[in-house]
Image (tube, rainbow, N blue to C red):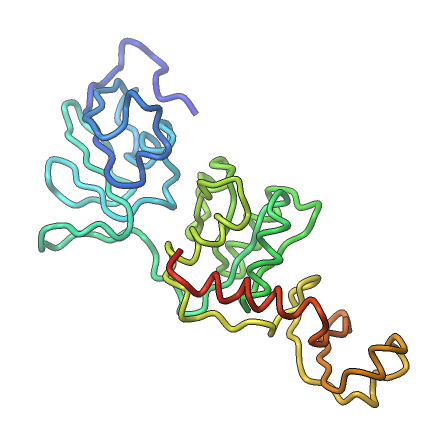
Amino acid sequence: MSINIHKGDMTSISIHFYGNLNDFLPAVRRRKQIVTQVNGQPAVKDTIEALGVPHTEVDVILVNNQSVDFTYQLHSKDKVKVYPKRIELPASQHKHLYPKIPRFPKFVLDCHLGKLARYLRLLGFDTVYKKHFPDENVVEIGVQEKRIILTRDRGILKHKTVKLGYCLRSTVSLSQVQEIMDHYNLRTRIRPFCRCLECNGRVLRVAKKTIEAQLPPKTKEYYQNFYQCRDCKRIYWQGSHYGKLLKLVNRFKKNK
């Protein structure tokens, strides 16, 4: 979206982004006051996003040191300060725009984040993901089911109906998990091995005799405890792979 349209109607404002909001800016604009021209009196949300920052990353906006929401219409010479979540501000009656996150949040991921989806399910988080997932479906599910949208596509997060979302900085799935654990403070909420890695269904204990016919001969002989996804019926047991998965879970529980 462009905010520089009709030269005759241009308005000059200054805007300063704080904390990790600078991740979305080119290096020459980071951690400094940006003087920019806007057309007419746009909503501050539109200007923030035109400069590259998704509104889902913003918690507090001050205009001329007064707290405002996304609908505030900019005026000539306005001085704007934009803060992310988790930055301590002087005590005041600020309007916090970042939505309250449930204790056990639910997620929906875009089609490029398959490995991340499996890791989140491994840790017990309700995670919707499909390999071929149009952006509009991601937005629809996020909004209707109040799920946090995880993506590296800022365009998805700039959709006006999206309230919950996070733009991943890393391209490496293991690092992305660490980002999410830190950003949403989830390390103490990990409940591993309770969700199906394939379909996200709940995994429950199942009697061996009820699934015995489906087991490979050696598995049937050497293992007694089994679990099954209540949705896709996939069967799980603590085989040779279990130790590696447990080690991975413990890694995610730690602070780095």
